[in-house]
Image 1 (tube, rainbow, N blue to C red):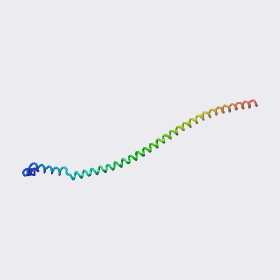
Image 2 (spheres, rainbow, N blue to C red):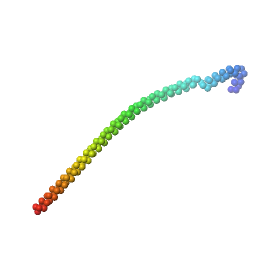
Image 3 (cartoon, rainbow, N blue to C red):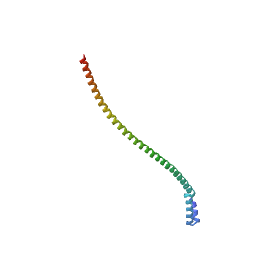
Image 4 (cartoon, rainbow, N blue to C red):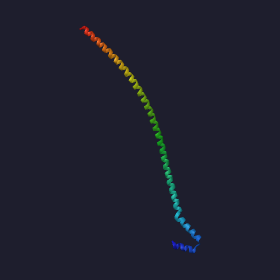
Length: 128
């Protein structure tokens, strides 16, 4: 490489040598064809990723819609369960009231039965 440079500097002006070296550096380092190919490949990959992102975005929108529908269903179920809970509480309150009344009536009837039993025993004792 040094011999080539010595030859070029002895035969050509320094400006020409610089121009030749600049051209060599440009073609060897930057390689426009390879750079263009790499840029095209990167652009293709970017477009492919962008297409995949659009697919993922559509799937996310579908998932969001499905989740919103599920949330709506859960909310309706929750409201239904609250209504059911209120109804069960109401029924339980009515049951307790009926049970108390039945217990009172049972106590009264039992008391009447015991009084009738005592009268009957008193009558039987008088008859004997």
